[in-house]
Length: 181
Image (cartoon, rainbow, N blue to C red):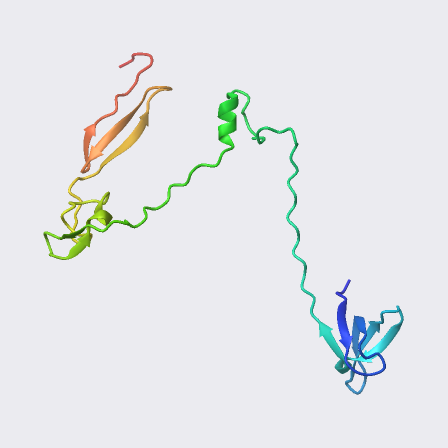
């Protein structure tokens, strides 16, 4: 089904009426006529030049209303919650607090970089790698990071292998449940 357009008649016998256009046709001479319904329900063919089409904006669809029981004390959480305590189940429905990025420091404690001599805010340097006496551009990480890998050798016997600078620092023990060693 085609979309029904609305238009206002600008001139002619039906001037000032609001009509509904159902079809637009062209005759042998190239003139365009619109088949219209008038407000009283009668049909009329009106020249397209005598009409001013009214653009209709689609109404936004209302969001579906979430129906909740008036007696519900906690939200329903699907899945296996039967083995959990009531407090644990309630806490599962709560939203987690998002960790926000560190805001710029409100205090300004200006210091001079030992390496390049530039002035920087000491409060902005807190928590960043390198010495506090160096600015952001000159600071170098002095500690090398260690990496770990979880090794699962048994149901409850998981250990971690720790590597620092590519060298194995702590090796995970292997678990032999039948002592076949």
